[in-house]
Length: 634
Image (cartoon, rainbow, N blue to C red; front, top):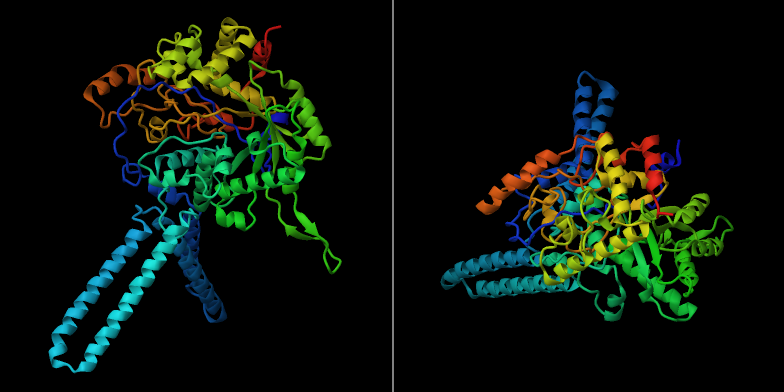
């Protein structure tokens, strides 16, 4: 078994992320999507989510067991019959518990009216009943003795006291805020588009996510999301230094919701510590700052209740500005302390007792040279992974890869698709003009004139395009880069996969976990999950979403396939529908690839199933051809 097969076959605690940095298709500024109700029957989203939940699976198992035991009861007599009846009663009790759990899950999907509205409605009904009773009793006062009047007064006082108590409870719960995401109450985020998009990615096999961004797409109509992204109260300075807080809160809400439906431990979220959290402090102050940063991440990702119960972060990566000038070891040692259980000797002389459970499962480094990784390992830091730039254009990190392979440290290959330039969209076109793309981005205009691939260039954004073109320049220029794309295209055609899939598979075969950043769109991104692609032009790659907000990186071992989606004519202007029928939709049919050899039914738009097989689809000729073109020219 090769090293890549062994790596993909293993199951390690902090599941490594592989993230699809996919050049997304261009979209023009179009009208906002129509009102969308994910609970509507035509989307079938609620039924799909409930049918795949652990509560539904448990209910099905118990129902089948109950029917089987009832059939076995027939014909039994004596003690055997009594034992079988006892088993039936126990099964029915378990089935009732499972039905209650399933009902709670289904109720959490209901359109949220809010506790305040529900309680106010209850108060209104109570007041109405009270007034009716009061009027009825008032009519009878003329024929009833004075004692009845006293009883009426007592009843009114009791009702007023009950109303006051209910109002106090409402105020207390409103002041507490949305701390716990999941309970038996309604969940306002259960069916929002971005939640459904993340569910689709996780269901397709992309179950590790990297909180690598500071924010999230603006959702002005999603009030619960805006509350979720609000700064933590009481410490504005800490909130401003918390670079990844927004992404952590959103991914944490998704993690808790997904595990509530699918079962615990289904999703891993990797987070980072940035140097701006620390200053030139003493070791004591430094350790306190690390503790505070880790605690903020635990509350955001795990939720307050799980964090208080001793929940553990999957992976914390240290992103240091300059490993040569700054002493990063004290920070790593502080993290290492949090990655170990604090034990105390047993008073009875037995095994040591765990006084405080660890708060971190794994520690990683970002963009660290070989010397820094070696120093960390010598200091006793249990490094789980190292993130380094490594792709077909830049193999300078090969010595680091060899050293980590020998030490058992995982390597996340960042920039796996060269900031989105390794794509079929850039094959056979002129080099993009970074200056024109930057000017178009600043002016809010389309980037169609930035070289021969305007749609893909606009989708990348000027920042990604500039970084990618610098990498191409170090590689040997645009002409040599075109030779690499032609080689990738030939291999992709042979195996019926995309160009991006070939580049990512090559990285997997090198023993790395490729990480490619997915750029999220506030408009088209979440809707693409349901087959809507708004504002596409004929030159766009139909399967990709518009990319305007690089707010987080989902650890995604896939990429956008051309032709995975067809544009929808629902609620679009007639001119736009006609243009899409004549240009885009015809292009979709012409470009639609055959199914990938890896069994690759694309479970979700943009995820190539061929990447999820253990055995590589690259043969010896493919490896030789790519090996002759990888790395900068000599």
